[in-house]
Each structure stands twice: as structure tokens, then as C-alpha cells.
Amino acid sequence: MATSEKRAEAARGMTQLSENEIEDLALDELRNLGWYTAFGPDIAFDGPHPEREAAANYGDVVLTGRLRDALRRINPEMPDAAIDEALRQILTQ
Image 1: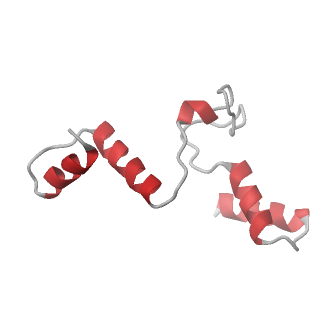
Image 2: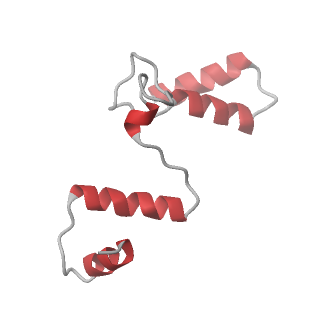
């Protein structure tokens, strides 16, 4: 069954969706909105495109490197020390 058909049936209360189906629907919606998605094991510290440090685990929801890059992109005039402090505050609040 196509994703749009599953979404329509779920909206009408005609079917129960599995956790995997709900995840797939959510990922499809995010992609449709222009978001980039990645498969968790691919970005794990030992995956083909690591974005996590070895000390991190799958329960960590923030990709620190991406967040640091975004802070630098949004605030290009800020010194590294200020970016590091902002990152620390975001991760500990």
C-alpha cells in the first residue's frame, strides 16, 4: 500500500499503523518539507558516514557537530569561545 494511502486510511481511523509505518510516514513528511534524513547506523561512530563520537549513544538526540556548524553559520562574527559556550548552554539546559 502506498504511503499516501496509508496516511489516508490512518486519518479515517481505518487501520492501525505499526511503529515502523509511523516512522516511515514521519520521515516521508519531513523529506517532503525539505528536510534531510539519515539512517542512524550510517552516522554512528563506526558507520560509513560517522557524525557521532564513540562516547555517544543512540539515545543522544543532538548531533553536536551539526549543531556547532549551524551556530557558526548563523553567527559568523562570533569567536569560537562564544560558539563553544552557546553549545554548552544548549546541551545542558
